[in-house]
Length: 369
Image (cartoon, rainbow, N blue to C red):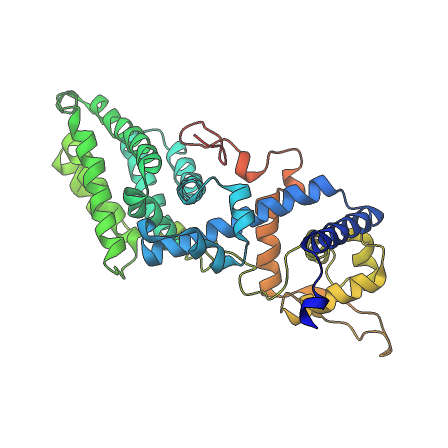
């Protein structure tokens, strides 16, 4: 009976294709632009894979992470992984690029706001140590795991540390004593600070990293400006304006525990609710481009069960329409969607985050070196 009930593999494949075509036809009927939908979904799936890579590398060590470790953590298929990345090292390199861009986004504005070299060094170290407090996993990825992740990532690390050494070397213009400093000192200073931070990141350090900003600044500038100026750095108060801790990992996967399948319609409905809090089913359907109200109702029910949305209204039959709002989890998901698909109104006309120019090297994020 079982043998007789089996259908040829070709027939089953045809059924899969037919269902896909049926879904595409439904999307087109609802006004969904399929190429845009696929591109935005790919950006979200890429972000989820990178978040899984960061988590796996910090737990297992970059050298021990497999593709299966990454895909199983985020629920993205192996096929999708290889559509987005060449291999495990390519995925890790992309995670490092995103982490580096986030760190640079904190450090470079702080440095550029100052004019004097010493002030720029101080501001940069304060911003980076605050970044480590807020994103310790990304800090470990950049400073520790990048050492064992393969030649491509190691070469990238060496280019970045070279740029940092050039920045420290600008201290040679601070006076006659500074001008006589050996060129190799800057490389040694950068290497020493990285070594200190690496040891702390891997040893369960519990004190705020921002407390290290003053002594690390003194360590760098003393040979260039003298011991008296370096001692004054040790007496400076903590940069309280940047101590605020962020409980949300910048590259975290907001859909990991959502219990709902990520589709283009899911994204559109969540964004619609974010833009129109307490909207009715009909308003959400019109805003998200889904004309079938039955599909809208089913999707809203699934999102509510997943804890991403909540119905704050009375509902049909109870004296009033539904009124949908995002939960805290839903708000995090929408922020992630906007970040990775460039759908925030203020970003209109800008390139997606994965394609913006890297502020450290001038290369494009998401491109393969």
